[in-house]
Length: 114
Length: 114
Image (cartoon, rainbow over all chains, first blue to last red; front, side, top):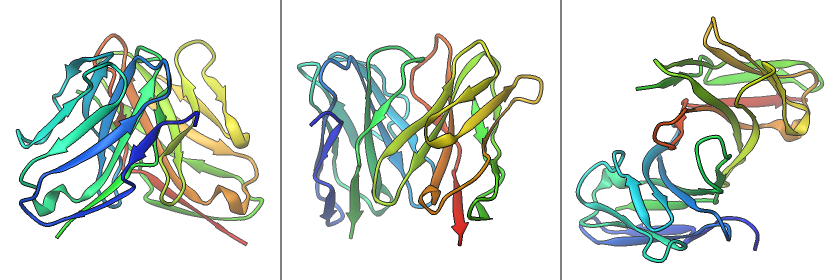
């Protein structure tokens, strides 16, 4: 497909479990972003990659959150020892390059922690 | 740090009536401005963006927005809405030359009444 693909679309986990969320960006897009969207809120920035380099991770809420993009394409957001407050929609976006390039969003992964 | 305020959490409008969704931002440096639309259970789709130049920008689906630097506003308008415009609308900024992550407002739910 031509768009950003995220999997799974829905994930239910028990508190304390580890989860991994996957993002396939648009082919050729250098920049990749992760956002967290709580219910009824706007997305909040988590982290940013340029190719395989993680240039900004200032938005990651705790050291339980970890993101990687080892080959500069597919990215994985991992959350260890999940807590109820981690329940949210996790959005991935990609763009051709720097800030003026529009970001293209996937449909998100809805994570529910029981 | 920058911030975005969307003053109205919900805006009900009759079909074929005009609408304005308000957005104000705060930043100590120059910014790029964006409006995104989010339909239920989907990611965000770019409506329009302001980078520089003409302060009136036109986007998809008949939407337009005007950048007002003195009032730090970027209000979204449409002269005649349709049922299909029912969605959540998000205003966002990114900082020129800074981290490329977007800062979003909390969103405005546009409700079109027949």
